[in-house]
Length: 369
Image (cartoon, rainbow, N blue to C red; front, side, top):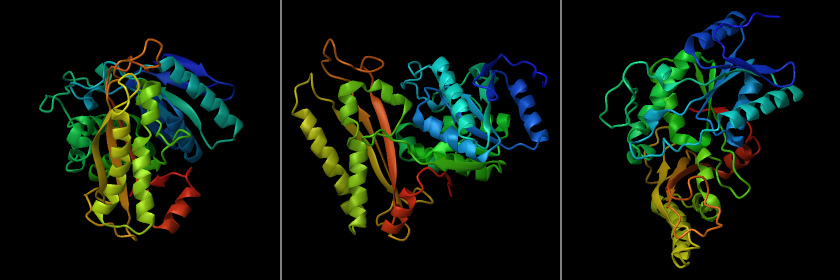
């Protein structure tokens, strides 16, 4: 039996022969990574903030198909939350997350995956930010990675420190893990562009893989923040994907002008909002539209007209407002329905032949650019 690596907190084992080790300190994880490198084994890396759902598991499954070892990180990064955002209330579900990873490790063994989950990294903020205490202020002190102009539009316009925090923590994690491949979900489309640009501009020796969005049966994109919705807001939350699909349908039917395409989205959004406003306060779920974007698939610059052969990235964000007049026995979700819940989603506008080909290979990850 191989000797245990030093400084490992404990082993978390699934059915033999699959097991992974839980690390909280950088030196011990780096030593494990050196062992993998000397053994000439590839390492795929899935960075997460925990509260794992089927979308995260899809990323890990893809990594298991393409790498001999898979590392997963669970770390809620404070620098990507604004001062008034939900960092303090973000779900902390480490034990259930580890249980899901144990189950997935066993499942991947039964299904004869190429690789196995070998490391789960749960660092502390003191380890990740060893200098100054991390700041969420726009002009706050600290060592940050800034990717402009990609990080200044869409999500970045509404959340000015978000992509600075994402790029910074990804740079740190990539330096620690040194992965051959990193895996992200298409739901966070702008994030994948920011990470890819960072990898290219800083010559990082890793490959970015983007996995299709995993959805609930009614189309809602899976997100760790969905637990905040509760039954009332959850029912209305599908309005965003319905709006985006209306644009997709208009594009397939021959519309290419920006105003015509976006009008299809706002028709769905406005109709749902008026419907909700007409309901009594104890029944309705109100929302605000942050943006609907029609952007170039290479640069994310806004388009005035979509060329069918080129396509577009269609994305949007809405904010589900706090629940009004909640009933005593109502399922209001984690947090009691008192916080605004931000939802994002996107689709690719493509020619009909490309859409058909894409739908036949939804489980297959592709390089971003």
